[in-house]
Image (tube, rainbow, N blue to C red):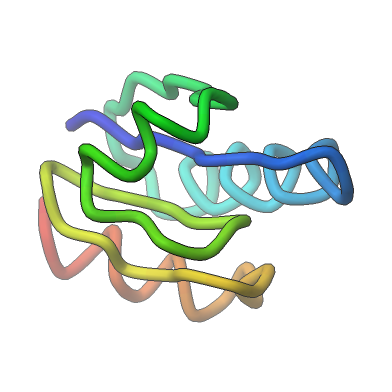
Length: 78
């Protein structure tokens, strides 16, 4: 599973912490990729950061998700 985390200048560390914790709690095998280039984000369909994309589907955009919500999503897609 590929999890892309799209960041801007603010709150990046918190988003990455949430993603890593959710992956750990969900018990899934996932590779995390950090994207901070706005052009690359736009090409991937991300218009608002922070955003999280799991296997080519944007699951969160414009906010930091709750760990519990992301765990449920990850478990549903494994």
